[in-house]
Image (cartoon, rainbow, N blue to C red; front, side, top):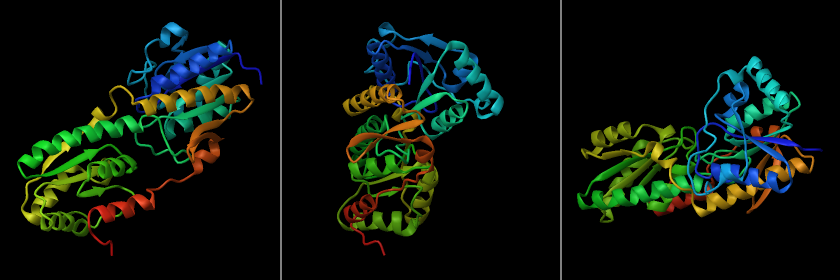
Length: 326
């Protein structure tokens, strides 16, 4: 397949490492003498023609920057057939034969819709929630996890001094991968995720009691936002055992900051592979990681896959908190 002009965009929630992926796409295009254009503000930018030609000056010193230099936005218009046809018209007018889309499930659904009009697309998973089913790893997860871990470690210092219970809410509207990973890393007393039904007495209250029996006077509860609001969890703890927990909602601080080395390297590899796939005549694919390596899957297949919390993580959590899950 002859590839002459590639567009690259970031869509949905920003994730540290997106800039490294954009940089890799641009540099790989330049290496192969392919023109590369940055589409700003996600799919909406493709509708409005908010496009800029990318060169080395546009991506200089961006590998270490969080956020996305192409900006990101959600586009309700692109979810309509009329919006998609406008985007296709922009591609045809500018001569864009391929689009590399960096983001999450919503981004890939948009890419799939565009592919039905004959535009070649490649998706790169970028979301701190790590909830793309077809890949073991998403750009931004490592940075967000380390940011949350650092924040909770700092919080623990002061909470231990006052012998208090902390309820910390991390991101994860529909997925608990970040909460589970962070909770295990900080040695949480309890971790609440949306994938696992919550028995509040057993999963929270009894674990606090057991921790107290073992001599602990500070208790850390990590909750994914999709499993319940931290304030409500704190109120239920107070009602059950007359303890007044302190609530911390980490919020969007988890999305910011300079990406870790792991996110920079994985994003660079994924950006490179996206262009190489197009040059090899493969399109409508999602770049993913599997068994420690990099591969790709058909976009329809990737979006149909399901992903759950690993049983090993549940087993480890059960063992670490000292309770037998009946």
